[in-house]
Amino acid sequence: MKKFYLLITAIIIVAAARSLAQTIPHTINYQGLLKDAAGVVVPNGNYSITFKLYDVAISGTELWTEIKALTVTDGIINTQLGNTEPLMLPFDTEYWLGVTVESGSELTPRIKLSAVPYSHMTLNVMDQSITTAKLKDSAVTVNKLSDNSVSSVKIVDGSITATDIGNTQVVKSINTLKDNITLVAGSNVTITPSGNDITISASGGSGGTITGVTAGNGLTGGGATGNVTLSVADNGITSSMLQNNSVTSGKITDGTIATADLSNNSVTADKVVDGTLTANDIATAQVVKSINTLKDNVTLVAGSNISITPSGQNLTIASTSSGIGGSGSANYIPLFTAGSTLGNSLMTQNPIGIDINSTTASNINPTLTLIRTGTNSATSIGFRNSAGNQFNIGMRQDGKLG
Image 1 (cartoon, rainbow, N blue to C red):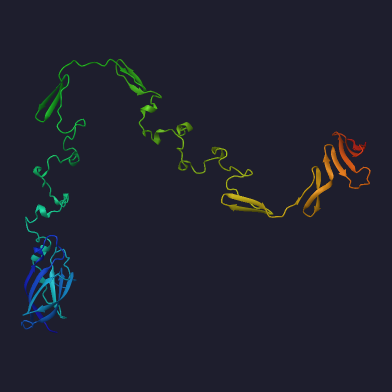
Image 2 (cartoon, rainbow, N blue to C red):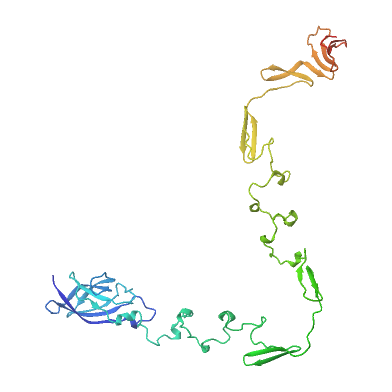
């Protein structure tokens, strides 16, 4: 394996000459003289050279790698590090440059970077080089200002507001008045300034005496002599004395809110305790309160020959059998004329009993009437024909016929 030796002639930064807006990528100018193991400059030609940056002088893991195919003339290597693989390192610590030629081992020792490349971080802006024209509007924030750096001449006149001034620093207002306030002495008052003091004194008058304390609306007590006490009278606080939204739940005695205290539509479903409403709370004709005295969740069960069909809000109850049909005359007791057909029988009902009618045309008395007569102690059954003749059979209380 061919060995090489590298003589570093220059590592200089060129990114510092760029405008401040072009901070990425950073590049470092690199020059070196490449010789073989015998100290002879290598032949002219193209060489694959790998550059790596480490944060240790020996071993460690590379933090940045760039492989370049460079043309070497008279042994001179001249390139810019970072023009193909951007140098994104913060340059806030020491770095060492490792160089490998072709497939050989990394040349030793690694090259420690001088202070010049660190101008990526600190030296790429010259002192006094940033002018007002270079600053974007609102670019200087509170964090950019050092303590006590803003003097009075830097503040635009009339731009400081009360919110800019910290609490307990100045008098911000007097009785809500601001700016230049003048204290004016009224009747029997003197105002005397002295340095930073202003003395306000009563300058005349003999004062007065309280001759009595009178209890106003809602109060009790008072008096004209001695120490007097004012108290809130029973029922002295009226609605007009209460500020809106001033009565909290804790001020209301449990169980004292009546219907008249509630405004219409003020009680929502969320305010009602689950399971506490009774049937009496629900107005008439509003809901189904019961079915055949049953309540809560009632289920209609279809019995024999019955079907129950739900459809939307409807329940259709129907018979599943063909039923019994037929026709007859008024007051006739019905008679099955077939398996499921009704017609007239020979018996009719009249106000005094039941008539048994005969359909035999030759019968002299075709109609016979059964009559119940008597009292609770004696009962009889009478037979009357169509001619009006009547025969009674009676039973006395002692069980004998009579």
